[in-house]
Length: 110
Length: 113
Image (cartoon, rainbow over all chains, first blue to last red; front, side, top):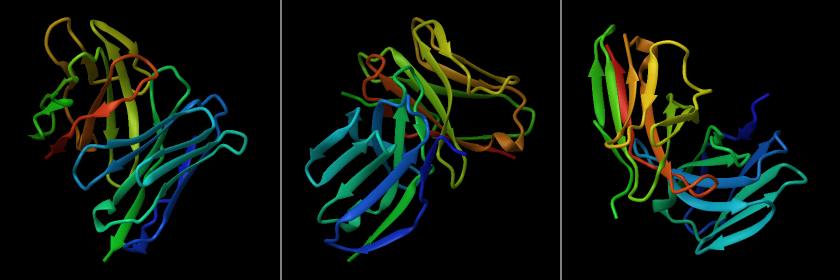
């Protein structure tokens, strides 16, 4: 079993839709949770960084962490074609390395 | 403020040659991480370095791979005697301290022919 599970998609939605992206994990030691966006042949771009459980909002993006269920989510409101990318969840136990999911490919069509 | 700089962006090596990948962290960052990404896979941790020290190399293959982060200059990931299976995108990230945001470079795409 992988430490972090993420549905690879692709997820295809119309412009303006609310997108929900999710990851589950097995290591209860994870405390730091991140979402990265990666365009084709580019480096990952940090979108959200949260510590422990709870919600965090930044513009059209909302990150949720439920440590009791070992489940994290990223919501994108009013999705745009420019949001089409691969979204990677990542987490850390607070030592050094990040453990990544395999990424969900999102396509937002006009 | 320049981001994490990696070079070269693309590198082609023949089997058996050496590959040297460079990473300059963001200004003020002293923690550097290297990750490898294979097609259709997530990023896999390789090594974590601070200036002049390797902190965690648990993700590095035991042979042919080495990394350094000298007091002066960029961090270097070195792959000796490359094989076709080393073909991948190699990403470097940096952070100011532990447990703070890690920012990634644009990667070096290594192709072994």
